[in-house]
Image (cartoon, rainbow, N blue to C red; front, side, top):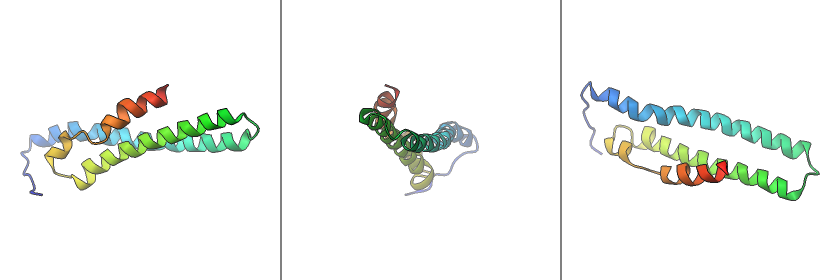
Length: 108
């Protein structure tokens, strides 16, 4: 990988591309932690709920886990492995999966 020398004006453009990824991933992990705690409390507090309801809660937790891991994969790709590579900023990564598919499943 050849390092790319950036002009001073390009740093503002890079920030416009990378800050939303970074800012979006941090609350995603925080909310995933909240969901994990809520799910643990649910399974502990309501052990006699119907099996279908418990399965639905587990499926929502699993779908959110997949979405969080897909977002984290893209964040690590941009800020870790692909740091400084302008082509990584243009790549879609797993966003094709996490945004329309996982987002639609978890919203429904």
